Image (tube, rainbow, N blue to C red; front, side, top):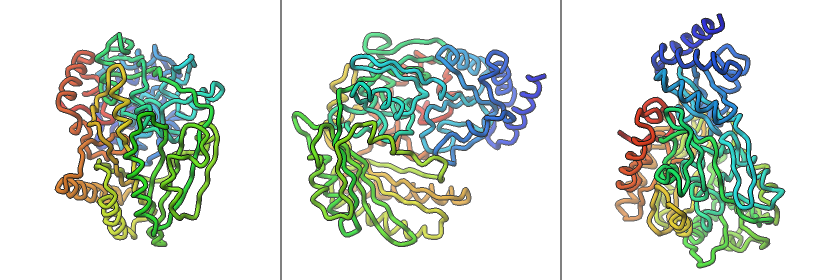
Length: 491
């Protein structure tokens, strides 16, 4: 009787979706999951279904899976993957749910596998084992008693798996590399349900492919990450008015070019906000530096600029991270991102063009436009190259700046307009940068729009190698053919 009711609920949910996968295949998967793990399976009529369905920060990701499977350990994950594969059922995987566009970590009418119950961790001398259900604040809290830090997410509610598998930007990339460069082992469920480990000596090719290759090879059930002794950090929060925007950009460019032989780990959030209603422009820096310099020395160029707020502090990573929330279910949002060599004049021109274009959106309800400047210094690239296997990006040994449009709004009726605006503006500016010989092609998945092909910007030889690894570890194409979410290697 329960299976029949579940099948009816699944059928109804699937038929309600205009992009539904085959009902028979999904019913097969949901029923078999329910037979084996009934307490861990939610149907659309379950009490907690809606809560799980919308556990995403971008409202556009609130889709309607036919059933939700909530495994509690790696063995259950393996059983679940084996079932959806045997039934040939489309599925999505949600770790922290941070990637911000429809279908990246949810699915209409298919199976959603959520990982939020996998939160076990184990602290070692210089590593920590973490489950994919953990958020970065959980990792920071786990390490705080040991006065150690990890290279992970900058906002506390970002999930471990998504950020780590796509590269992972942290404050301290200039010294320690990206999050992917700090993984020493992955525990992985392959498409046939087999559990394997990947590290520098076992499944070495898979170990490399997971460093920036996203969810194209398997489902990671445990990450083992390097940790660093860091009892204190020096922090700064600074704001600037419109007249200081050029100096703010110039300071960002200068910081991106710092490449010391013995670097001090330092980095931050650099953003420019445009209030379309009041026409006010403001820029902000939230910076973190290892050690106890107060004010933090690496941000001296920013501190020298006039601005209404200058707050410096010596604290811990836990105290700093505790209040850095991601806005959950607050608005719809679109990203667009591109790379450029550090050039203050050109970045200021991009900012001015963005500012003028934002003015055309004043009628969009809840418009929330932000221009983001992410720094990728040479040290970040070098740190990745100096690991056991490198990473899939294989970036040139030079500084770059990843400029991004992050635009929020309220209503679904504006989705097409807003995503098209973001795409058209960023693409036209990127083409101008190409003509000026300032553009670089790498696109960071964490800041990319759903229309961008991040893998097309990887070295061709790396893509060829990744596809060969994918064919070897997932010959049935479970994570390319059935798992729709995120950025996928093209056939």
